[in-house]
Each structure stands twice: as structure tokens, then as C-alpha cells.
Length: 78
Image 1 (tube, rainbow, N blue to C red):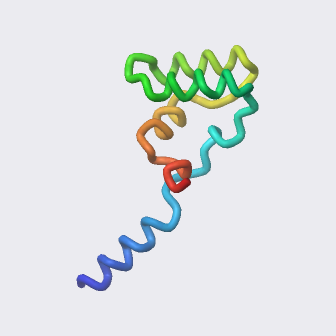
Image 2: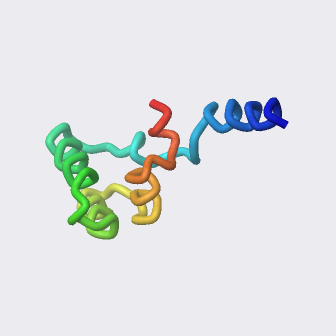
């Protein structure tokens, strides 16, 4: 049984979560810095970040932003 659990753990660590739109955002360096600060701030909601990105013609929906913030996407593997 322990061997099976170890196999599950190994498989789980291969790739975490679905692809993330964070990698495909087309933003200036200043906007990327502002976005990273917003992502790190618990007082800024994911919906607010979505609206900020939409104003810059970027698409990243709030529930995927929340998944990224929790570390449940492939970015966590980088």
C-alpha cells in the first residue's frame, strides 16, 4: 500500500494544475510589476484584477486569477 501512495505522490508532483493565462499576458514591465503587487495583496480582489486587465485588453478571468494566487496552476511548477 505504501508503494501505491508513493506512486500517487510522484505523479502529483509532475505537473500541477491546468495551463495558466498569466504566462500569455501581453503587458509592459510596469504593468507586470503592478500586477504582481496586486496578486500579492489580499486586499485586492481577483475580480478587480480582472477588470484592470480588461482595461488593458487582456483576458484572465477572476476564478483563474484566484487559482493562480493559491498556487493551483502550472505556474507553481516554475
